[in-house]
Picture 1 (cartoon, one colour):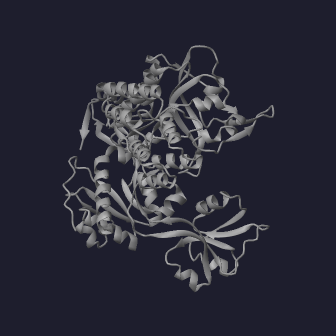
Picture 2 (cartoon, each protein chain N blue to C red; picture 1 turned 30 degrees about the vertical axis):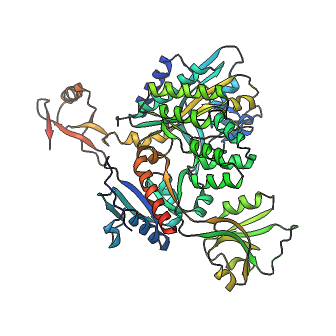
Picture 3 (tube, rainbow over the protein chains, first blue to last red; picture 1 turned 90 degrees about the horizontal axis):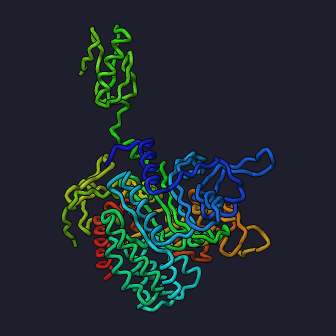
Amino acid sequence: MKTLSQDGLTGSLCALYERSGYRRYKMSKFEEYDLYARNKDFLVSENVLTFTDLDGRLMALKPDVTLSIIKNSREASGIEKVYYHENVYRASGGTLGFREIAQAGLECIGDVDEYCVCEVLSLAAKSLLEISSNSELDVSHLGLLCELLDCAKLSEPAKVSAIELMGGKNIGELEKLLKSEGVGEDMRRRIIGVAQLDCEAKEASEKLKELLGGIVSGESLALFCDTCDFLHGEFPETVKVDFSTVGDLNYYSGIFFKGYVRGVASGILSGGQYNGLMRKLKKSSRAIGFALYLDLLEPLFEAGGGFDSDILLLYKNASPAEIYGAAKRLSEGGASVCVMKERPKNMKFREVYRVASGGEAVREE
Amino acid sequence: MLREVKPSVKNEIINVALPKGRLGDNVYEMFSKAGYRCPELENPGRKLVFENPEVGIRFFWVKPSDVAIYVEKGAADIGVAGKDILLEYRPDVYELLDIGLGKCRMAVAAPKSFRDDLRRTLRVATKFPNVAKAHYSSFGRDIEIIKLNGSIELAPILGLSDVIVDIVETGATLRQNNLEVCETLFEISARLIANKSSYRFKGDEIKRIRDSLGAVKGAEND
């Protein structure tokens, strides 16, 4: 695991996105509340901090970035590629109150083609690898999943339940549900097979062709299998295909993905093709993007050794020039040096030095 | 029947949150039969955490309603929680196996003389407000939820509520208090749950435990 700092990570992510031609999208902290009121399901938390602006409009502190980017995107031809690093404001279950949460991510909006999809997935995988080599990007395809469930002629509530059970890897209850809905044995085998899919992208591509061939649109299946093959070639260790990776079908319609790193209990990255949300916001273009929840990475930031500074330099009767000289010499190798008169309580240092007579730094036990 | 489990190849220890009480004892017995015995746990003394590095497992007892929290937050990689708890708190975890223990049902119960007056708001006493709310809102019945933490059966007897939504095992307590089941909402049993991130990074071990427990369950059902 790398030693991580939030500032360092943010810098590397911004550089990563800029190297791929994404422009920084800087936005106001406020947005009209109406945008969120109409799309509450898309938000992680329904609670939004609101206030009345001087002109009487009901405004909100942004709980989400994607909605604002879509709202302000132009319906011109071509593709708009933007990234962001912003603070959002939303209620957090753990703290029973609102929190300011740092979030990074990117959006690709417009004439999104298969290359754009592969590019965004690559950037999601690379973002995870910036955090830890021990990371995993799980990819699924909600369009194929829906087509499969439609072929099984599931009622709408049963379809929603089936997707929820797939999301929980609850194969036992999924099987019961399919039986109770009168789904035939062959179709059950296919649905359960897809629900259990949790393997490397290359293997998934082969399995999907067997499970979905002749059932779903051949073109969508071929495109997804090509994407899987590409991802396996580029990120064989990081990308898996896992159809328990599901999201809200009102918004996401194609590829959907989530990212995990070892040491963080929940998914830290989430994204996908949100053409459904675009339609809801009366935009004709397509879109794909992801968000990285930087607040969830705190356990990793803390795991960087647990020291406040590398070196504590203590002084008593030395002159300012002697102290400054000793600190300068100690920091030459890149170590952080904290200069104090007395050893502070509740702080930890790798090494402790004292300025001796003549300005020499002597290491203390 | 005791299975032999080879130590994990990656020396991964799997942290397991077990529910305190009779259900937890039965769950541990199942783990033991599946090859995940932990001699330390059988003579607990004052220890809170019990480990058997040879089979790569670490157990700890927690309050049954807290198992899902330990697993969701990653303090435990896996755990065993009742379906009632999973439906009430909806934790973001995988539900890998119905281990078939702790079978009971979630039901609406009321005094034998109860008749639902649709002109009035129905007062529902329960330990499971989310389950009760979801049930009644599915057919638009207006209710007032009275959240209690125990002795739910007392509420309709003393006029605190019209009905209760609670777990029913044999129904003996209800009968003794002149109450009866009006409606069964769903069947309950204990489920093996897993943290979503642990499933990614300790997946082989977790799947091995799931399959071993499944085999024990299968053998006991035969």
